[in-house]
Length: 419
Image 1 (cartoon, rainbow, N blue to C red):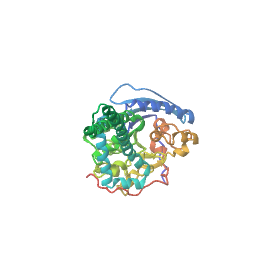
Image 2: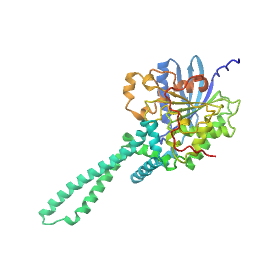
Image 3: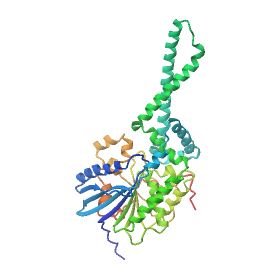
């Protein structure tokens, strides 16, 4: 019987972070890594620090870690597509409400919404939130407009009545004009405050995939090709591991980027270890749509490859992710020789103290980013040890069983794949 291969010690690592649907400048991820990494290091008893990275093709930073007695350097790059996100966001209120109608119609009429609800209600409720919130805002705007119009007509009738005049013939015109004017003002106020409500932002997010029925728009395909070229170059460098991290909708971009690289023979057999860490994934929101042929084919292909290690981390406490749903299996494209992903839970209720959990429990959007943050009762998931520690992703989780409560049965109505 042959001995198991010795773990591969990492001294240098390249990390490529693929964000989700986010219009904000990537410096937010640098600051998050800096502050949360320092907190995790203090809790877990290791050292980690970041320093600026020279300006180049991508935005990023350098990391130095002293973990398990080993010094590790990592270069982190954010693969930016925030400009595409901003370009996809409707600038007008009317266009956003049109997106609402179109997106809701797509998910309901294709049967996708019902099948998503069967798996996890949390992310479906999150998807319905912007629909409900935007409709509520419209209702409030119209109601306030009607109240103001009624008051205005009462005052106008009183004033003109004293002069012996009547505006009965103009009442409908005045009522509708005032109601519409006030409603527009209120709707503009709601949009201005969307940093608190997130209704417009989430509506744009869900509409982006629904508009193309799960296919990638040309601009995104072009950017993904560029991302693949950057990662392919790193795979030829003198590093020990190339780690791709896809968060939220960045997870399914990572699937397709890596599938393309492996198909094209751009992952050297004797090169750095290749790892793929998908966090808080929402793959079914896209893969369950009728025209997601490319994504389903990429999930099918990547899940059987031995040239990478793929670990999928979610948590039932994250209401915006399809927690513990195997993205390959639930999409109905698992091959017989399926190896990946290893589906595991970040177990927020166990890895966060009761006090910390109570602080974050109802902050849904903050919890969706917890995978990139510090845990005050860490278990076997630690983002900073994964990105700045001496073990490869594959070695770190070698032999770890998947979470027992994972969902790995076909749920998608559409399982056709690209040829």
